[in-house]
Amino acid sequence: ALARNEVVRAAIAQMTTPGQYDLVLVSNDEVEVLLNLFGLDTSTSVQLGQKAQARQKVQARMTTFESIKYQTQGVQSAILTDSDNDGISELVLVRDDKQAAQNGEAVVILGVRENELVVLNDFGFTPADDAVSDDFTDDTVQDLLVSGTNGFKQLYVLNLLEPYGYEASGSAFVTPANTLSSVDLDGDGTKDIVVYNQAVSAVQAFIVSDTGVIGASSDLAVSITTPTGLNLVDSATVAVTVNSTSSTHAENVVITTTLPSYLDIVSTNKAEACVIDGHRVRCTLSRLDGEASYKVDIEVSINEQAGLDAFNSGQAQLSGEVVASVTSDALDTDNSNNLGRANLTALTGVSVSADNDGDSSGGGSMGWLLLIWLFGVRQWMMRNRRLLR
Image 1 (cartoon, rainbow, N blue to C red):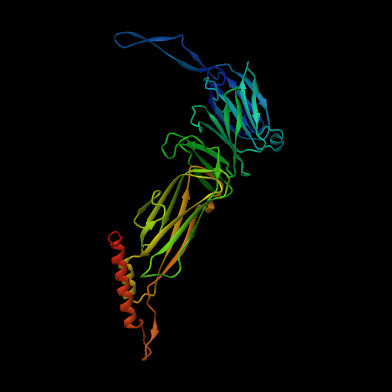
Image 2 (cartoon, rainbow, N blue to C red):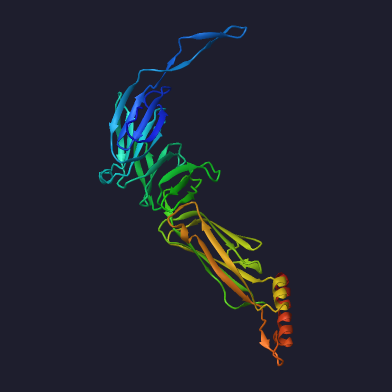
């Protein structure tokens, strides 16, 4: 009954005095705060128990309240935050109004002063859809993250030298987001970021470094090069390359490569960073600089049993897929190139031909015997590498 327009946000908050609760109603073009909505009557006491100990009885009741208003326009969402940790909430209005953005007022911070709603700060030159307030920089101070569907997302770090003064961190991200939320996804004590893009019905999660630094975005792209002519005798190299296409570095970069089951992983050229686990290689970098690349060469060979089974059954080739992915702590501006796939085909040495009687059969017996012998020699050499050295 109090709100005459569609309400964007309604909340109970301490806008004036700690312990005194006010009702905040935000619509597209107006903010209304009902001061001291719930009064406390503490004049009555009651005796409880045989020891007749006096206990205070608190009765909540509706009281006469005062309403204060602020006229605005284009409000898309609103959040409450205590940016200066004084126990009193400030109201952050997020506006998608183009005129407000042109004036640098896409975000407006309001506070109650002497029973009036006043502007404490305003900033932002891009229409915005949502905001979330949390400690993203690991300094116990509330920061502000603002998003918009046009691909703008900006972290504002509280400037403690000026009350309620937020200033941009100097980093803009281009992941469109209708809504934002913050949660510690990886359990490192630092809040991470979850965004929702309504246009493509996509949810994205961005892990924030445990150092608290998210003021940098990156674009990591992974590519795969597979060998041609892999056979039963020789080993070959699968190359996985990660390129940083932005000027900003990325921290805690993880490259994971999964190889077909018919292959054995012999070694990598990055033994200090990579761990081999079955048919998977996981490489971890503490940092990849902007516009830099990192290449992992994985030496592979055909698994002995898989090769012999294929050879003996007359199977001319083995095929499978190499899958590589890259992740990091940085906000990635393009997740579509974080995953790569490539086919890998190995030749078993079997060639199908027609015999004199017209039947199809394997190649000559001498060729078969030679390949089997070479395959056995290769397997023995791989098992006894250290002895041969």
